Structure formats: C-alpha cells, structure tokens
Image 1 (cartoon, rainbow, N blue to C red):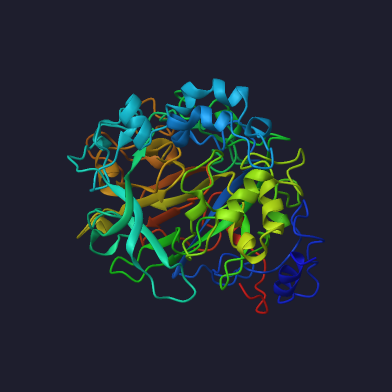
Image 2: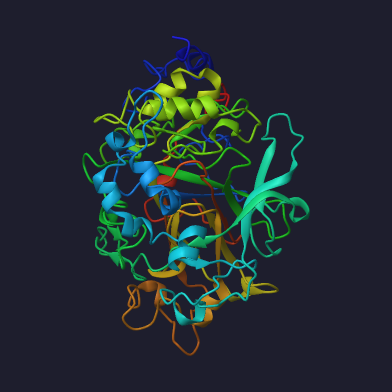
Length: 529
C-alpha cells in the first residue's frame, strides 16, 4: 500500500465522479476530466480556437518493451555485446532470459546499423550533424533542394557544467555544447559541459513518399486515417517497421490524442511544443505530478474520439535512468538530474529482469514496476512509459507575404526516430535511436521548388497543388499537409519538440482533417496538474 498512497492523495484533487485506479497499474485507462501535461485546461467542446494556442491531432501507439525493435541498446552492444548476452546479476537474473537472448544476439548486424558515435567510428554507420543543425553528408532520401550539407564541426550534446538553481527543476541540465544560434534546443552556458557526445542519426530508413489509402465520404483523401509510412531500408532494428504506425492487435494499443502548442515569447511568436530532459521529458502517455515529478497515472483520454470507444494502453514498463543490462563500470556512482543516487534503483531493475522484462499482458509485473515498489518516491520519479510511436497531422496555408522579412521555418528536435513529410514528401529525416537531434525546413524553399507537386509525387494531382507549377512554385494561399512520425524505442532520454510558424492557425472545425481537436472534454478546475 505504501506505493499506492501518494497516487491516491494526488488523484483526490480530481473530480469525485472520476474513479481512481484500483492500483498502480490498472490495464485500461480510467475515465477522467483532468487536463494533462501541465498545459492549459482543455477547451470546451465547440469553443472558438484561441489564437494564442494551436491544436493538432495525433495517434499514439503503445508498445511493450520486449518488442524486438525496442530496447536493443545498440550503442552499448558495439563494445559490450557479449557482456550483455552473458550478464547475470548478483541475484542470478540472466539477461538472456529477459529478452537479450539468442534472437537479440543474432540481430547484431541490425544493431550495428544504428547511427551513434561508436557505430560511426567503427562501422561508418549513420550521418553526423554539424553545429548548424545540418547533416555532414548528403542525405539522398531528401529532395535535391533539401540536401544541404554542413561543413562542421560536429554538434555535441551532453550534461552542462553549470547547475540550475531552481528548487523544483533538475540540478544538472542537458543541452548542446556548441550549437549555433539558429539551432533550436537548450544550449549549455558558455559551451561548458561535464560530458558531451557527437550527434549521429540513421538516414534512409523510410520511403520518401507517403501512401494515402483511404477516402472520406466526399471522395477526398483522408489525411488522418490510412496514411502509410513505408520502410525503405532495413536499418537500426526496424525489421518490424510495418507494425510501428499501424494498428496491430496484441502488438500495440492505440490512443487518439490532441497536442496543444502554445505561443512562444520570442519575436517570432511561433507555436511551440517542447518536452525535454530539463522540463520532465516527452511522455504523452503519462500523467506526472509537476511538483515532485512522480508518476501519477496513465494519461487520461477522451473515449469519444477513440476508434473503439474506449481508452487502453500498456502501462509504464521503464525507468528514466541509464541502466544498461551488463556490469556497467559507473553504475555504483550514477546520479539522476536531481543529484540523487540511482545505483540501487538500477540494480533492483536489473535484478527483476531489466529493461525488457514485462509480463504477457504488459501490466502489473514489469521489472520497472518491481523496482519502483522497492524504491518509493525515487522510483515513481523515474517510472515512465517509453515504448510508443506517434503520428501527427495538420494542414496549413501557404502565404507568400508570410515569408517576409524572414521565411517561415518548421523546427523539430527528437531523441527518437523522427520523419516529417509535407504534402506526402519527406522533408526531415532523423531516423534511429540517438541523442536529441535537430531538424528544420524552410517553407519558402518548399514553395519555390514546388515541393510535393511534381509529377509522380503522392499529392501532385490533389487540391494542394492546384495552381502550382515547377516555374512559379506553390500557389499563393494554397493549403498544404504536414505529417510527422516519431518512434520512442530506447530508455533514459526522451526529448521531442516542434516549433510551427505563427500563421499556422485555423478557425474552429478546421484545425485538422480529423476534427479530433474539436472534441476535447470540459476543463476541471479542481485538478492539480
């Protein structure tokens, strides 16, 4: 009961007619009216869109951590393959009995294709990113007009040397050591770091064209359902890629959600969604107490916008600490970002089976949960749902006048696989499990090069290309389609941010194709998120 008490106290702040979970892990999500993520209260159904915020629809698919494409520790496997495969903890827990087995060992060629600093040095895998946010080699998966190359030096990310003073925030910050001003994301003051590693990603994992397979009742393409991202090359543990962004019973569970982007305070007033190591991380399936960072419950969702009419996900099965499944030399002295020792938490996790140890139902008996029950508040502060993918969509209007005095830019950062498409054609390619990597695209560049409207491209004959030509580019005032795909497949770091131009705002009912953003429940002012 000691573990359940703090959760029940926190849930008491929610509406009395919202049932609390029966225990820490309860299978299907419980209905609630609490807003989430510390964001503004949810808009009442039918309310007008607030120009200070932007909402877009997402589909999240939750996976268990024993999925063969998840938790492969590809970076560690370069030098510690046999150490992981043969590792037994002090209590006799063998990692090969909990997922790091013969199949995992035989997949070494796929682990080694994940771009990171070790595979790049040893096998030439991946592409490094420069301090200007551009890849340091040509990425042929992108259109020729987006194949800019950085001259370097290599972008580095790590723990900042300067500590924070905020009581509620982390003591140790993370950020880029040497990023130029044009790169989004936290930058360590003075470029001073305790440690920093080069940012490397895996290009060419996906086909540069989306498939659109469903029509709406009015015979127009459905931009939300039936959008298919396809595998191009077998790289970085993507053997089962066809499962990542599709509904596959027993493999994943789907939940439809709405992301709220707020206006930034900078001169551009862009709409920003930003969750990183310094503000709690990117965990859209978790409700977390913003004061003490403890996990509270699975993220509430609106049943009325779910395909099945109910909300179901696998509960958290991971811990937000670096705890590789072998005898890691620095394990006894490791601390989290708050300066707390995580040595025992890590050891308890491994003794219970480690990062891939889950039960067949995905609830109740994960190794992470067992470690949490033995570590109280510290365990809850690191109990998170890491294994998921996300597809997001919205449409936007191109206006030539908005490209002056500076062109509009789409900006992203992700620590997991990230692919961004405009009008069905790839514009940002950041595949693989990697350090937080930046990616951006200039709207004016897309418009001038008639992006997505060339013969043979997925939407070339669609309404977005009406009035467009290879000579004049996009028609002024034309509507275009933004899709992004994210996969979160590795524990410890979970960062995701996007910045969309301030002109990307629509009237009620026109937020996105699916209209899910119009169906959010009423706010509950009694909730303490």
